[in-house]
Image 1 (cartoon, rainbow, N blue to C red):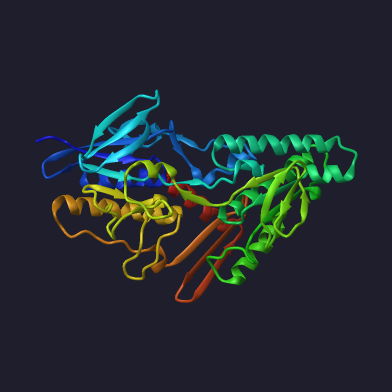
Image 2 (tube, rainbow, N blue to C red; image 1 turned 180 degrees about the horizontal axis):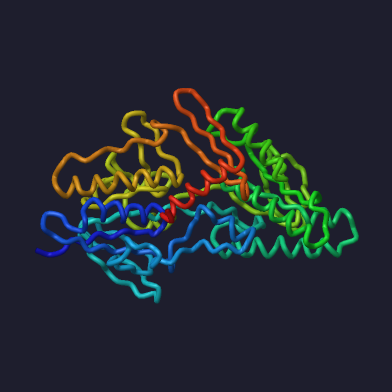
Length: 398
C-alpha cells in the first residue's frame, strides 16, 4: 500500500507541537501504511515569536535551527509558503525559496500558519514590532538616541531622546515596555546618563491593564511596571508618530525619541488566498474536532483558526498556551479519525483554569491564575521562572 502524506503548514510553536503529537500518536504508521511527514515553512528555523521583543532590547537569537529538534528527524522540510489548498483534489500549491511554484498531494493537512502582528498605516510613523529585523531596528534606534543624549546639553532634548512610547498595552506591549525600561537604564548608566531620566510610556486605550482579569490584577500589574520604570497612560491611544513626538487621542503631544507599535495580532493574511472557509475576521472555520469545514482530511488550530468550546460557546484566544493544548488534542483526533473511532472534542483551557503569565525582565514576572472564583498572583523571581518555563515549553526547548 502507498504511504500516507501528512503535511504541516507552519513551523511555529503550534505547528511543531502538532507534528510531534501526530507522530507520537500514530508512531508513523496507521492501518499498515507508513506516514510521510512534510513541514512547510518559509523560515530557516523555528522563530520564537513570543520573544520577539528580545532582539529589540539585546542581541538574543530567537531562531532555533530545525536540526535542534530530534523529533523532526525523518521529516521533510520544504522552505516556502503555501499559496492555495485544493481540498477536492487533496493537493496544495506552494512557492519555494527560489520562487518556483509546485504542487504537493496530501492525505492529511494541518494548517497552523498562526497570526501576524497588526501594523498601523504606513503614514502613522513609528516602528511596529513585527519580526526580528524590526526588533533589531528598534534596538539600534534607541541605543543611537541614548548616545546622542549623552552629548546633549539641552535638558528638554535630552529628556526626549531618553523617552520611548510603546503604543498598545496587551501582553506584548507590557513585556516590551518592561524589558526596554530595564535595559535602557543599564545602557544609560554605562554612557554616564542618569538612569532615572529614562522614561518608557505604555499607552493604553482602556482604563485598566489586563482586561482578561479583575481590576485589582490590573492595578497590581501597573504597580510592578512602575517599579520597572514604565509609566502607563490610560484612555489614550497614539494617533500619529512624528519627528520628535507622538500625537495622542486626547490631543496631547508627547515628546519621545521613538514610538513602538504593539497593537495586537491578526490571523495570518496568507489564509485569504488558500481557498479555505474563513470567518469575517480571517480565521479558518473548524468544527469541535478542528476539522476544516467541507475539507476532508484538513485540520486547523492555533491563532489562525476559530475554535469554540462546544460546552460554553467560548472561542479560544490567540495565546500560545491554548495552541499547545489544541496540538496535543489534535494528535488524538487524527489517529481516531484514521481508525474510524469517535474523536475527542475541543475543551477550552479556561474551562479548566484561567492562567496568564507575563515576563517583566530578568527575575521579574507576573502570573495570575483563577479557579472557582479564587485568584492567585505570583510576582518576582518565581513569576519569572514560570514565564521562562512557558516560553521554553512553547518552543519545545524543555
